[in-house]
Length: 473
Image (cartoon, rainbow, N blue to C red; front, top):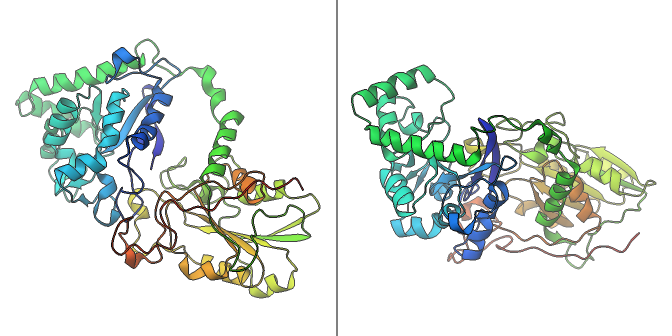
């Protein structure tokens, strides 16, 4: 999986690329493949951000110009394989396992001239990655010949101890000697400067280690042109939220939707939905909630509920914009059984899922969708034809409700472009997406990956029904 977030770095920005981060539970076997073509695809975004590195400069940090940004691959290395997928946990695997499963995206990232690499909060066989000299200095810098700079995660050095900052001077020394070149330091700048000065003056951190860090940071800054162009180009402001980019995002939504079920046993498919109907119901906690569509790391760290977070189109508004003008669209977030039965709806669209989260706040041992979503599904789908759209960052427990659902769609986190969901529900485009992870029946099965003896999924890895675009209505 790939995760992008924008972080200011003087002026042009750094783009952080999460090259292999698993949802809670399981390892990276399914969300990341050892197939060189897949690895190539995962890291192709680097060239899109930085520009295509010239053949003669392969393997060196490269940013094509002031309209490009420096990329940062994260989180180095193995945080997609932590025990039970728990954030900042321990990855238990051999050196061979680490190299064959978790390291390949970094081989490609270095060749593509990625400018920076961020270290993971997690540990490998009990050793904190922020303290791992063997993997940061010896393997990444010397063996892979990475010439950009290594940056810590947010307070990553502080959190090398439990509790955090228990011995900050020791943590700082250990992290820098391990090979970290830049410390992501949101707080306590004065303490950092005092401790760093002391460590260098006492030669606890040798000057050649400082020189190496400075050389690497300056190399990237010179490559980015920060000394010539220290501030953003204001003429680029109109690129933010540009319609062309929203259309591309809408296309991405259409292509990423996965159709898991289409029609009850013996019934004809429900999708694509007819645009012309007398009255339809749109229900569910996520139907008219842009913040829920976007998830965490949207404007704020954990994301928010509601429609005031950013600009975009909710699924409800997308449905209203898509159906025939004569079709009455009724929205009820959590309708009662009686309301559904007496209202004469032609069909219903139920949109439910997870609330926004980021990092450890999303850790879950049950992976259920919160109330009242299960009741909403039952109240609606037991009485009228319905399509259920799941908004989530990962597979969630849905098996208990599949029997009453006519059609089921995994929409993941469609972000601001809810219109992309309506595009496919109503057949302007066909379903084409496939599962990038196995969809389990019960969390008791986890971890479960293709090839495991107990592999018995609700929907297998790579599954996804397809549909053809509907004829014009």
